[in-house]
Length: 577
Image (cartoon, rainbow, N blue to C red; front, side, top):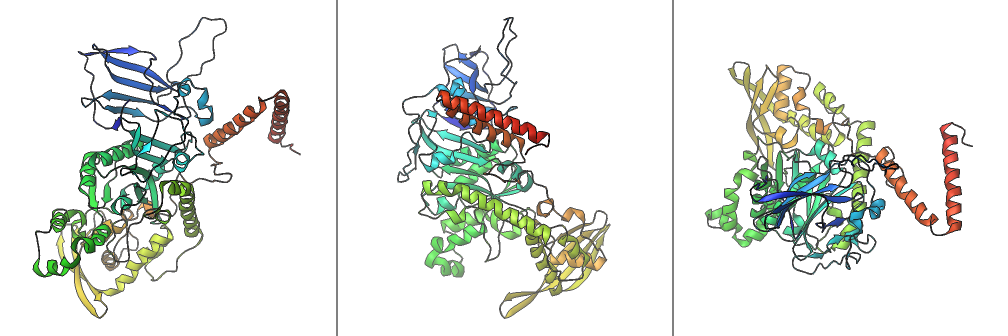
């Protein structure tokens, strides 16, 4: 294939022009060290003999025909559903039209060399992957067969092709160069299931022209800590590159788009998000916009403020996009602590500590695993802290005690700011009754500047029939917990507990996440039977490779394996000495 383009649009067969040919054919041009064999299960040709559609399947797909032989070969297929279908489009590019990523059997990269599909190599296939960060588009040379030496450089080390905990997809151009790439760890998908309501697509490295053109799909966990939900490399800030990357990410997430997407201000990003996430609400990062003010306006800033200039291109774009970034327009959008409005707040990448403008691609990849480990450790330590310690209460309100038992410490402390803020709300007055809905006005004494305070009114509506409370300040959607004005009304009407719909599972300390692993030995999740099998299988293959090299080594290996089996039998019987 000359090029791969991810696209969710359906493609239909042209039955009048084409016909189907079954079986394996000489169509295999891509070979990956994936831990499973690949075969061409179907190919479609036009009458002109032009190949226009194909299907690649796992080598374990289907089942072999029954044989009448006296000694039939053992069945090695499992009816595996994993496959990929693609079609040649009018622009002569191949487009993926259907993907099934899940296998129904174990896979192992160490056994990949035994598969027929993995024996297809060319002269350049085992050369190290050269990286030239000085090229304008940062092209990374790949060969037709993606079989690379994982010890030669950082990029290859990151591309853990055989790892069961790693997913990747590459966009290759007609010259065999990597145009765009996407990868994700196994934990990213289940983490997205818990915390994927709002994502921040971080393109800081592109805006600030870092050496590494990294795009990070960022979420926040139940401690409000940034976490990676997948990463990408793009060669250029174009609609095409972003669209490819977003489709790759959405494919990995099994087609489940987020509710809200936050990005920097970029027309190419906006176009790609409209294309790939049409139902998601797209917000622009206020932090990013404020960061641009000095560079975009410079000395014009005072003139803009004084004379209300409207011909400035950037200001005109801001005005057109005002409903995406001005807080007053976002009160109905759930943003889960990810839309920052205070001066001391900003969205950060989980890899921020490991990236600077001059960090090379190889340097980043060499520290990537360490970054992931520290991110996971930070979350685990926060879990222990939240479960084993409690915050000191600041009031006698029962709903403060209620949330102290449910929410993580970091979120509960933020909620306590609203508890303290109740003391600045000096008046709660009923204004209107409409059926079961009552409207209140809450007056708050607000410190605007160091020596300047003012009183502001906030409208709060309470519906007794379903215990719904809505404040005009919109804090619940911004932060995910009730504001001081809503709490003042709840206290006024005598409710002791916060209604359950305002206690979000994403902030709870007892949320049982399936991606939290016990990496008790050598980074392996010892509680996962698939990981145990995979690691033992890799280790056993190394023993086999060494044992076959000589007769003496063979005898020693057999003897050692027998001893291990005997000890395992003794252990199973509780008789291990």
